[in-house]
Image (tube, rainbow, N blue to C red; front, side, top):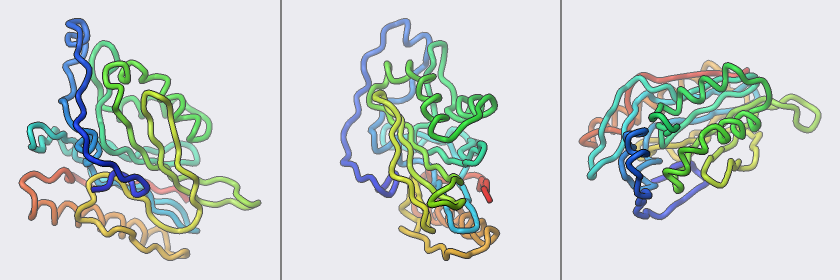
Length: 239
């Protein structure tokens, strides 16, 4: 299943490098899980048209271990707001930084409070600050979807794109300015491409976004032993 609509990956076993005793003491480790399992968490998205951007997500934090979904909490922050951009985070939700491990939301929030600049600069800056994590987990990828406002062809427009961080750096998909939705996470119970009319009011977009997450929660609860999507719906808008 998908982890961001422009990427399709084969399932491969992910074996983390062995830890020294010092590393084990400093960071009680994230479970050994596959790349696929690390990205099949959450239900997040960025919806955009001529009226603005809606960033949305569920609130469940969980991980896979021994073929089981382990729920950590239903209060995880996955939607974030900067100056002239909003973004959502999905997949791996913890980062190891020498002394211990932290929710990635903590690192993102702290960097947003002291940041002024465009969204690409923000992610480059965050990547520099989490280098230690990639020494322990060189195959890990942190995944985001960004919605933004900027000048394009001489006028102010709303756009969106994917962002990925790994040990080699930070990469972005190409910017998209036409109306539509980018999704990420566990999407078995979410429509592939929700249609968003160009002039649909931002309030209606919020309702659709809420409906997408709630549908993933309700259907997943019926079909799955443990649903990786859950908790309250988080919404942020840019308009």
